[in-house]
Each structure stands twice: as structure tokens, then as C-alpha cells.
Amino acid sequence: MSSKSPVWHPFHQHGLGEPIPLVDRAEGAVLHTADGREVLDVISSWWVITHGHNHPRIVEAIQRQAEQLDQLIFAGWTHQPAEDLARGLRAIMPDELEYVFFSDSGSTAVEVALKMALGFWANTGRARHKIVVMEHSYHGDTIGAMSIGERGVFNKAYSPLLFDVETIPFPHQGTEQATLDTLEAACAGGGTAAFIVEPLVLGAGGMLMYSPGTLREMRSICARHDVLFIADEVMTGWGRTGTLLACEQAGVVPDILCLAKGLTGGSMPLAVTMATAPIYDAHYSTDRAKMFFHSSSFTANPVACAAANANLAIWREEPVLDRIATLSERQSKGFARIAAKHPISNLRQCGTVIAMDVDAGESGYLADIGLTMREGLFRRDVLMRPLGNTLYLMPPYCIADAQLDRVFTAIDEVLTEAL
Ligand SMILES: *Cc1c(COP(=O)(O)O)cnc(C)c1O
Image 1 (cartoon, protein in one colour):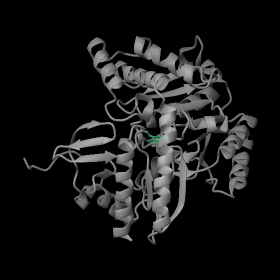
Image 2 (cartoon, rainbow, N blue to C red; image 1 turned 180 degrees about the vertical axis):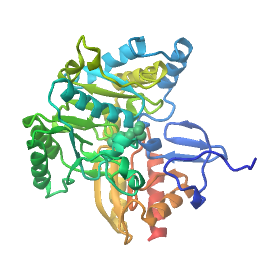
Image 3 (cartoon, helix red, strand yellow; image 1 turned 135 degrees about the vertical axis):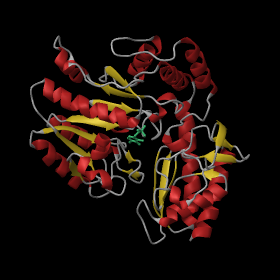
């Protein structure tokens, strides 16, 4: 056997021979590599870690639950961690979202949302199939989730498998009305089942941001035409945008809400799709053919639910929103200094998500400058993954000032070197 690792990594081109760091422990914002480096994880291990790695309360909850009940069939059976979590979510999420359906990842939360929407229409005798989506969206990598996401290099090879959707343009500043008009037209026909959108920030699409006012308008267009409004808050949820949910900033409540990533503080794979009573009621019957036909083996895994309950306790008992506010302010100052010194455009921020485009003569996800910056930052013990020429920061909320300063210095040096 060769010494080459048999591991096939996601979103990684093995052929480029980039080093693959081996990490053996983490705490807060720091990853400790096997070769003794301390790397700052300023993308929260791909947008999932909220309070910091290995938060003691979450670790303890996982340990305790693992000794008690490891896994349970969830079709018609239940356990206390799931019951507590569903009630805990009901207490902090909008009142209208009365029901909680569990799954394992953001992608499955989205698949479940789509199936709930079509199930709602099918079970109420009105066949509606069309899904409306926003340009540049990302909703996951399973076939359904890819179908409703931006078409491009990510999914070109699989395009024959993807179903058709109707796409509205991204509401760039000044072009919002065109977006709203297209949505209105797409909803007016009567055959539209749902509109799905990432509220305020389109993550993988390049950290593109739009206004709460536009989100509010989109929500009311859907309501006017009886089109289900699905909020994919997989990335934006759990304080990322400055509030618990991004939807809050627009004062809107979706019919269906997808949560994952930060649900367990980022410690365990778990997702929920929350729905309003009419959607649940459409599946509620003595007719077994109307039940919701979706499950995965690890639906509501007890250990993952315990981790999520610890996350909720942290939200209840620690000043999470204050931490977020302080962090966003520091990020904003740091990026302003960098932008003043380097060829940067579109500096933008929403809560703890801050991004800028580096003007290096090329753009798009495969822009070489992205890889150059990633390598330069890694040499300086900073983990970032620029989206093409878009450089962004999405750190865990616990990151210290001195750590952030180290990141800003690293970015400054890398840009000086690269440009
Ligand atoms: C990450 C992400 C997903 C997919 O979540 P996974 O847990 O990676 O499957 C879906 N929607 C959005 C907005 C995301 O950022």
C-alpha cells in the first residue's frame, strides 16, 4: 500500500498538490495542527462554529448524552433531547413556526423544505410545482438543492439531473425593483409552489448582500399570491448577520425555515426545517398516504440534539448578541484600514459577515487570486477560503482582539505580496 492518503476531500482539487493540514485539536478560534501550528479559523470551519470550537458546555452535553442514549429510531418514537430542542426552538423562533422537522445537514433541511412545500399543495388538492429562486443562490449539494442553486462550474456535469426552476435576478443596489417585478410575475401565474431565498446574505454565491426592505417586499409578494416563502437561514441563522435570524431585520416570518450549521454551535451535524401550522395540517390526516414521506437514519440523533440544547442554553444565558455587535465593529474597522490601502471594491458587511472584492483583473469562483491569497494566509497561520477574488471573514464570536489584529496584518501582507 502506498503512503498516500485514500481520503477524497470535498471541494478540493487533489491534483494541485496543496498541503492538507492534519488538525488534532481546537479551542475557541484556534486549530492546533499535528505539526504544532496554531491556525486561526476565521471562517468558523466553513460557517458552522458560532461560539468557538469545543465550547465547554456543548462538550459536556455531548459527553453526558452519549452515555445515556446514542441513537433512536425517530419514526413514531421520541426522546427527551429532541422534545426539549423542539420546545426550545419554539421559544426563540417566530411564533408562527409551530412544527419542527429534524434532519442532518443544511442540504437535507432544504430538501425537506421543498418536499413540505410540494406536499402541502398536493395534499390540499392544488397541484403547484414551480419553485422560484434567486440568482447566485446556494442551497446545498444534493440534487434537489443543486437544482435550486446557481448553475455553474459547481454543477455543470450534473445538469441533466437538475429540475427546472424560475430564477429572479439578484437585487443589486439600484435594481431592486426589477427583482421584485420578476418575482411578482413568477408568482402571479398560479402554478408557483414556493420561493426559496437566503435572507440578506447569499453566502457561497460570493457574500452578496441586499437590503431588509427588499426581503420584506419579496415576502409580501409571496403572501399576496399565496406562494410559500422558504427562508434558507442555514448560514445566516444563529447570529451571523447580527440578529438571531436575518429575517428578523426585515420583520418577516417565513412559512418554512431551514436551520443547520450553527444549530449545535457547529459541533455536530444536525438540521431542522420549521413549518407553520397550515403546512403541518396539510399532512395531518387519518390517511396514511398523506403523511410526510421523509426520513434519514440519524433524524434527530440524541447526541446532536443535546449539543443543540446546550447551544440554546448559551444563547439564553450568555451575552451572545453583545459579543456579535462588538465583533462586527472590530471587523468593520479592520477591513476599512485594509480597503484604504489596497485596490478593493464592494466592501460590505452584515453582522459578523464582512467581505470585499480584490481588484486583481479577474473575478469568479476560479479566479487564481483566490488560491494565491489562501496560500499566503495559510503560511501566516490563518485559515480563510476566498470565494474567487472575494475575501471574507466569518469568525467564531469568541475571537479575541489580538487574534483579529493578527488576521488583519496577515491580510495586509498577503495583498501587498499578491498585487
Ligand atoms: C451551507 C449551506 C447549505 C448546505 O448545508 P450543508 O450542511 O453543507 O449541507 C444550504 N444553504 C445555505 C445557505 C448554506 O450556506
